[in-house]
Image 1 (cartoon, one colour):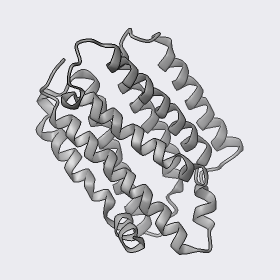
Image 2: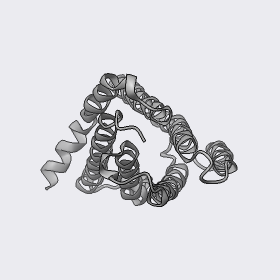
Image 3: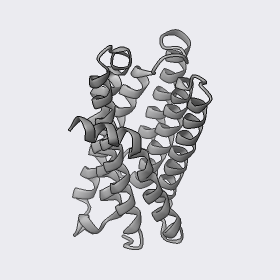
Length: 216
């Protein structure tokens, strides 16, 4: 298991080739809310490339995570806002964005500088996305026109987000401890598990985008 998790840590990010490939093939069929998923995938790709480049140059890259976290949640929140439409109060996502964006800035200025893992914003982001994912499932369950959720793009994308952020919540909160952990085996296994969750999320997103022609 340890060897598998180590392999996932080194190679898990390649799953983006699948999700980005599907997004490219299905780009003409993407509904309005699914275009935000395309932006999410593009952000993931750019973040991975820049992070690896800085790492190869031996330049600290933790500051990227502060920026990435801010952009990632904004895109995901706008995705849910478009999908929720008028089902929930329109101010809900606006309030979440204001709270989260303000918290990220204050956290970077006063608590966790750009040189450390931003555990608090990552944890808050996970909690908020988990909440939005549950609200999304509730909306789908109460809409009578959704007879077969397994053929519905949003079902798979929402499942992917829920699995990833729920599974990564504790890891994000304890990230700085894990990084500084002298037991490298534990650290590698923890982040290898994170890579597994990352792969599952992108595979679920890929399936959802592939089903994009199945319009409501």
